[in-house]
Image 1 (spheres, rainbow, N blue to C red):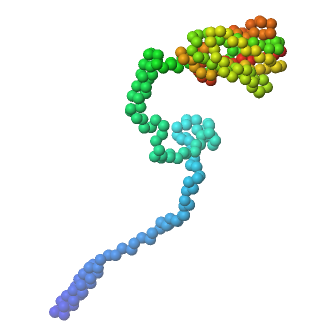
Image 2 (image 1 turned 180 degrees about the vertical axis):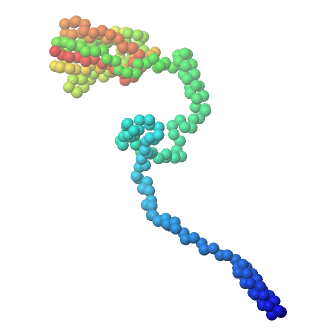
Amino acid sequence: MKQIFLFIFLIGFATCTYAQVEFSNKFKGIPPVNSKPKPEKKDIPPTDPNVPIIIPPNVYKNSNVIQSPPNPVDDYKVKTKSEISMLPKDNEFINPGDEIRDRLSKSVSKYLVNNGLKENDSYLRKADMDFGVIHTKSPYLIIRIRDYGAIDGDFIKTTITHDYKEEVLVNRLFLDGNFKEIKFFLKEGLSFLDLEALNRGELGGNTGEFAIYDNTGSMLVHNYWDNFDTGVKSKFKIVKE
C-alpha cells in the first residue's frame, strides 16, 4: 500500500516540476519580415541659375479652362528674380530740408521779380514759332524788322536755307523802333527763312514785328513774335514757283 502512495506521489511531483519549468520560460516572438522596398537614391543635378523658371497659369481661377486651355505663349510667364540692391533709388531717400529750400528759393525769386531785380522768365516762349508757307514768283524778297515793344536791347540772327545749305543774311541785328530792311534772293523750289532770338531784352523776352515784301512792293505777310527765349526762332517756308 505504501508503494502505491509513493508511486502516485512521484508521478504528481514530476508532473508539477515539468509544468513549472515549461511555464517559467518567457515567450519570444518572431519579428515580421520587412516587406517594404527601400527607396532608390537618385542623384539630382544642381539647378542652372541661367535657366529661367516658368510659372504656369492657375487653372483653378480660370472658369473656362476646359473650353479654352492655357496658351503656352501668352499664359506661361517667366519668373523674374528679385534683386536686392544697397544703392538708393531715385526719390527713395528724401531730405526734408529740400522742400523748405525750394520754397525759399521760389519766394526769393518772386521777391526779386516784383522789385525789378530779376527778369520774370515764367512767361517766355521756349519753342519755335512757325509762320507758315509763302508762295511767290519774285526773284527776291525784302523783310522789314523792328522791336515793336520797349527798346531793351533785342538782337536777332537771320538765315536762309536751301537744299540743306544755310546762308547767314545778318549775323547780329539790333532791333530798335525803326524798321530795318534785309533783302535776299531766292532759288527755285523750297527755302527756309529763320529769325533767331540771340538774347532776351533787359525788360523781358525778345520781341519783334516783321513784314515781308516781294519785288513789286506787295506785302506777303505781316506779324509779330513776342517774349522769345534765347535761341527760339521765327520760321518761314518760302516756295519760289
